Length: 174
Ligand code: PRP
Image 1 (cartoon, helix red, strand yellow):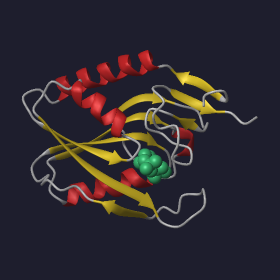
Image 2 (cartoon, protein in one colour; image 1 turned 180 degrees about the horizontal axis):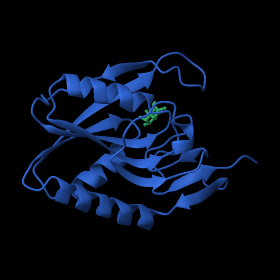
Image 3 (cartoon, rainbow, N blue to C red; image 1 turned 90 degrees about the horizontal axis):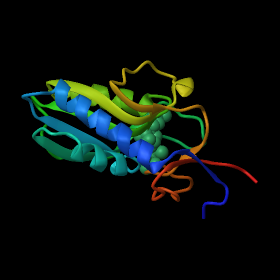
């Protein structure tokens, strides 16, 4: 399964960085509670691990958003396949994403959640691909900035496979 995969970020490095992010969030929201919104599917591994490293009262809910249309280029239009169920009015929301690429998904989520009366909305992402950004979105907590490579593992897929790799790898062609 792993013969064409180059390890980019080993499991231990990811765990260490997530612990730091959790500590930072704990300090930043001291005395408050936080509402984590996990963006399915890719961020489920990261969201669960990050949540365990946040020492605050915490609520967890889920959203699934995807781009309209087909092809590899982002259309910039986002639809919601699964919405958050719990009320976020007056809550400190943190959107937890596995990767920020064009930024369209985040832009749509930020706008939606602000409209719903969240007290604040911030973003935590495990990976950031700044070279791919098409819209200007503020990302508050970044695990790792990565180059424009096809990354898989730790939630990220290629054709729905490899999400269960415990590390982040790069799929290399033969
Ligand atoms: C990925 C990722 C982000 C989004 C980022 O999800 O999880 O949510 O794309 O892309 P953007 O910055 O260009 O909007 P994807 O749609 O691949 O779904 P998945 O999590 O189910 O793999």
